[in-house]
Image 1 (tube, rainbow, N blue to C red):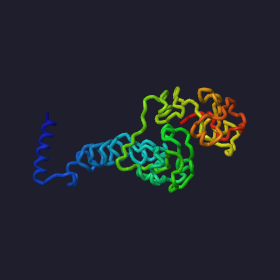
Image 2: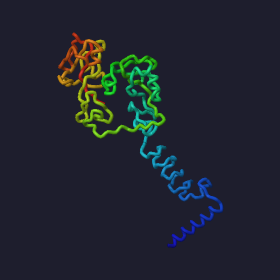
Image 3: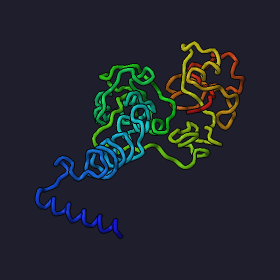
Image 4: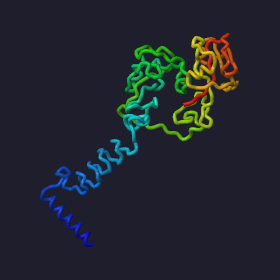
Length: 295
């Protein structure tokens, strides 16, 4: 009771004092009750009511107000600013490395400079695994991540003359109104759009136990100096899988022309052979090998 009366009297006296002299947060911090040089009671040196001194309204020290962003220098889901997701999944010193943009119609743009500029970014020549853009004969092949028809190491100003759909190599910087969120998903065991990890799409459209079913890799030609399917799959970071592709269990399918291969028309050769078997080029100039499909 005695302490209550003392506290009440101090409050009255303080009110009278402020009424006569004027009190504010900037008047020498005369209302500081916790000794931290501000006028709140949170024990830090700002006046935002939280327990850190970074001037935001949460209690972490990352300088934003979401309370859970953490490291924006290397987190690909929060690169540079909270919520900015790197398409390349690589964040270095707060900047995303260049990545392939969205699928767009090749006829709608002059070159990759105009493609990237449309999304507020800048084209990066040969900046995506050595390529400036990838191209497909159809938009469906592009959006379903089928192997590209071509991956030219071209200039950003070159005319987009390959296929109907392209993805250009662009910078990946936060832009005004950027509302990116980290990719989320509920089923990584059987969803072919999120197989193994969120956002990974199976070329075969089949995901079992978090692993994409094997699928035919990109077209190549006899001038690429491959001798068997083991070498072909290894070149794209995958492994050959014997007799596991298409309903007929082939290891390799071949075509006489590049266009026939990329368009997937009737093949001239189908082989259910070992992955290390040497290619027989008779009647086949553009084959595709059965490879794993991993993130």
